[in-house]
Length: 147
Ligand code: HE5
Image (cartoon, rainbow, N blue to C red; front, side, top):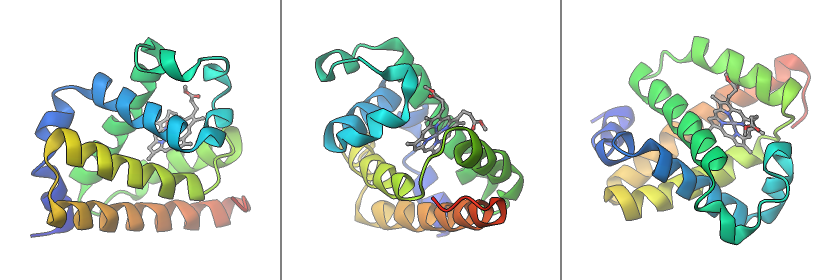
């Protein structure tokens, strides 16, 4: 089975609860990698204990996961999805590529716990994200962003 389909097989529980799963992903990213919180001026001052109940964090987590769903469902034809994403992350939000690797491992763990993502699904998700990150990186280089 193609990696995209191997991940989409486990997407049901994510799709059913984008806000909560999205919150879990970002709260865990900020807890395990506290420096990443500094990349989000909007979230400055939110303490770790308040993150789980924070509506803005849930909303942005849902945005991130919905974009990943678009990428998964594009099954490789994601150039038009990635271009605006690379543009905004490089030139506006200044997000270095390494952050995409960090969030990948967080999504693997959260999907393992909340969607039952098994070993094959985990490998498939890492593969899909590897392609996504390489394509983001190629766009970053075109834009001259060294992140
Ligand atoms: O780029 C956009 O739309 C094309 C703006 C909304 C958006 C942002 C903003 C989207 C759709 C995504 N992110 C999607 C996305 C998918 C991946 C795997 N992001 Zn994003 N982001 C936005 C990621 C990964 C990722 C890692 C990190 C550290 N992203 C970020 C950071 C980030 C920031 C700071 C913003 C700006 C909006 C904001 O601060 O919202 C609270």
